[in-house]
Amino acid sequence: MTFTKKRNIALAFLIVTTLFSGCAKWKNPEPAELEPVKYVYAKDGDTIGVTNMSGESLTVRLIGIDAPESVAPESYTEKTGKENNEYGEKAAEHLTLMLKDCDLIYLEYDQEMMDSYDRVLAYVHLTDSPDITNTANYRMLDDGYAITMEIAPNVKYCKEFLEAEKGAMNAGRGLWGLGAFEAKE
Image (tube, rainbow, N blue to C red; front, top):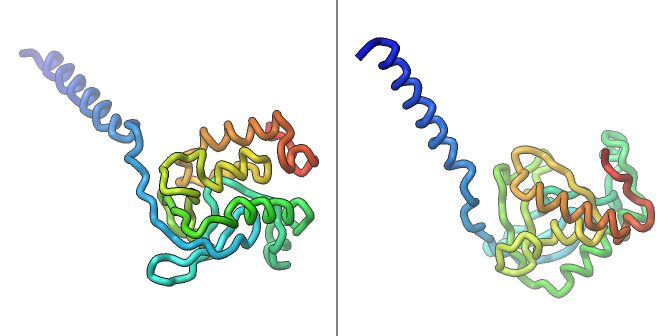
């Protein structure tokens, strides 16, 4: 066998090996593991308080969404320019109503579990079903009380969230109908 032929075989082997090793990350995601927690309160439109099964109180930030501010401290407002407003109060009310009859909710985690404010990052399932459309995250977008916020590496459901946001925007649901949000370019 000539050197060129050996090199071509080795190159073909390398390409095939690389392609098949990459396939693992493109397969369907594993079924979601959901952690049951006791719902306590909605702090605002994208943050809730829960108690885990060990009795520990946790603050949970809903992954993939951003609701207008309603309880942001002055230091946060100075840092981000986002001020508390009536839209934030409406978003918080909507999340509170959505979760008011939920004793148990279920947390699904993505790649990073904590943010820089020591909040747990999660998709908040309203039942023990892994269906993303039955999460508080998705429903806040679909009902028009939040917009998408992609922060890598927690981007597992970006496509679904963008579709929910677009549907709410096009239909003028929730805060979209009140002019709280502007369409993204």
